[in-house]
Amino acid sequence: MKPRLFLDTLDDERVVEAIRAAEAVTRAEIRVHVSVEEVSDVEAAAAAAFGRLGMTATAERNGVLIFVAPAGRRFAVLGDAGIHAHCGDAFWTDVAAAMSAHFRDGRFTDGIVAGVAAVGSELQRHFPRRPGDGDRNELPDAVSRD
Image 1 (cartoon, rainbow, N blue to C red):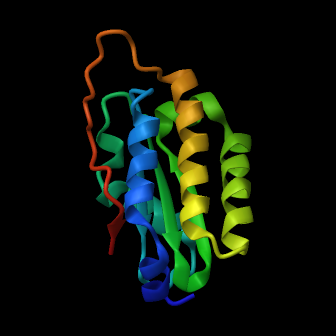
Image 2 (cartoon, rainbow, N blue to C red; image 1 turned 120 degrees about the vertical axis):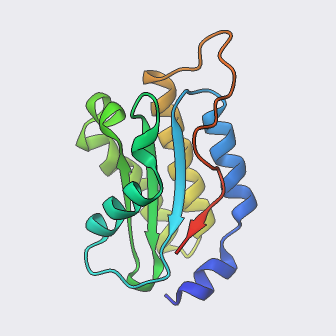
């Protein structure tokens, strides 16, 4: 899919609302990034974006990145060391499967929102917001692009 078409159909506002809803119940951080470049290795590209976007800078190492590369019809979901230690590989596979079902039908915003919601649920289990916790938004909620 052409990245411009993907970006034109993506409802950034809904994605940001989903991120904010998920982050309202957890101390963790979620980001969505769309690469306009075609990438041959989506995992490597996502890992590079993870570093560039400062995802490892969260206090509890509990950031999650949903990385989408529409030109190659690929995406990856990566979690930092703190969350990955709690979830394991099966969780990331489940999130990807939920997103893929929407993506196959061309419902990209729905897929990303479903992924954010699933990640938020898991983050809430392991990194719940505690009474008195203020919202320390460590990373931007906006969909980023390169």
